Image (cartoon, rainbow, N blue to C red; front, side, top):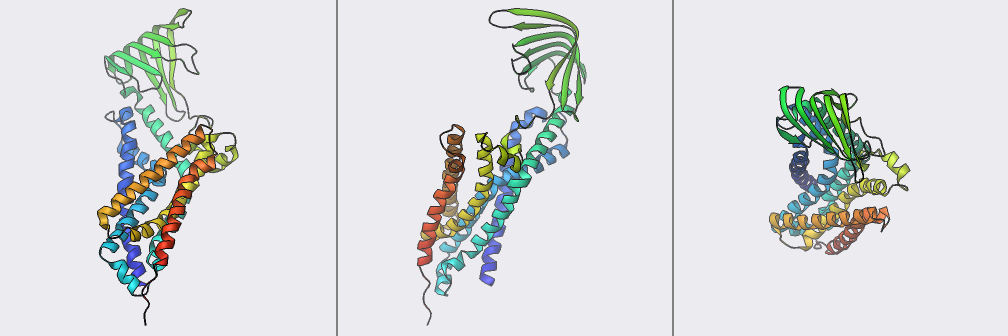
Length: 359
């Protein structure tokens, strides 16, 4: 039907523009966190493009439900303001027919997002992590400046007095926090040193010559001199136990959901967010029709309010799960259940507002 295709086309155009805009905004928010690692140190455009592509699954998982609800409110808010909804009802079209384009689009994107979340998300996050790591490894020697403290490598503060060449340092001072590799904090001073890197193995070593290692604790301290010492600044790719939940394959999440609450939360989240698209596809037209002539600005404001409340419930629910107060199912699905009930009520009331009978 021409009317359905027209509404669907307008929804699709708005949705595409909003998804692109949100994807760029969310990517920039993530990108700002990692710029200090290589920005201005010779990072290549291809590395930035690869990072952008690999982050898209995680970004789309957030941006698609948001964009879908905003697009629906914009389109149906405009239709209400222009009295197009009243005209369509007067022509005998039911509210189900009026909202059919939004529901169909939401189901379509829900299925697409389900594939992205269950399959592409862990692949993208692992590839992003590997690409970022390899970029840091390649640019490791460029992260240090003369007479400047650097904390690029987690748990280490490194000071270099002179940089005679791109991979040679003199007057090195290192402070390292206690972690799994060292029991107590230690301080290292060395006459000179060089970087040894292997992007394939994910390995970064600072090889120092003619220096001293000073370790200390609350009860004792010790000093050791060395002619050569390799300080491992970063190791290879982390194991599954150390990986973040979003990096784990869906099947592995399913197997470990009972033992690791964060994995259970991530598993439910990967299904709950795509399903939210369907709920928003039902809620958007129904709520727009009951709010009167809100227009585009009113529709945008209303959709943002709904989204803020939805993600607030999601964040609180996941926090309760990780604290062990509620099961993972309720932590991830409570927002969907809540807004699903609201969508059902508003859609039923809008549907009962029957079109004008024609004689």
